[in-house]
Image 1 (tube, rainbow, N blue to C red):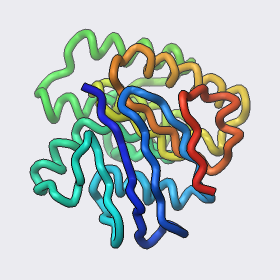
Image 2: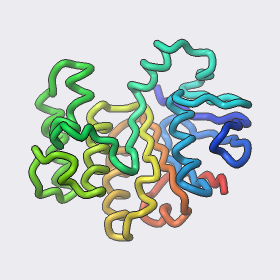
Image 3: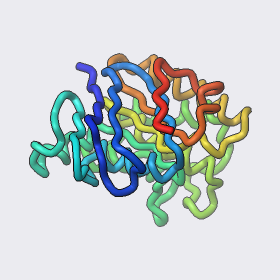
Image 4: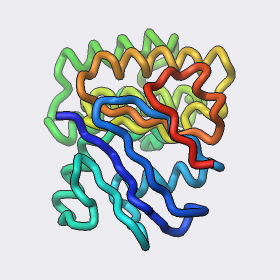
Length: 213
């Protein structure tokens, strides 16, 4: 079953005004915010890390305010986040960062997951060492690793947290092609692209565009 994401008249610190939006399950949407900071707060609200002072956030039809900590934790495991800066563990190698959630939740990395990771590395054109530490990776490569890490977990919701804002046209188009392929190959998955510019829509095809500017 597809997970929808809905904000109902949400107000909280970090958002300039009340936010109402609805993203239907299984669709891809670009949510344009005035600045990257607002996108960061939307991620925290979707994952239950922050709570609105007014209104409600609903994921998969459930009001997050009514869920227990254990329920929030389980829901969070089904939401993939691609942070703008990658969010990698500094003392883990590239391959370890990409496969860490699978090792944590399943205890192993299935062969098909390894094949998928290698396929995405090839799609991104990565020719470096898969055992490189994050300090030796470019910002683009860190973001790439974060995408693969999230994709391997087969999320119900995939959130791209301002990943496209600072990319050049060619690189952004590459990301757009890869993320679109991932969305289409993941039946029922909901994809949310947060951006501070509507120009992202030129290179990242989505079903819906929601402007909060």
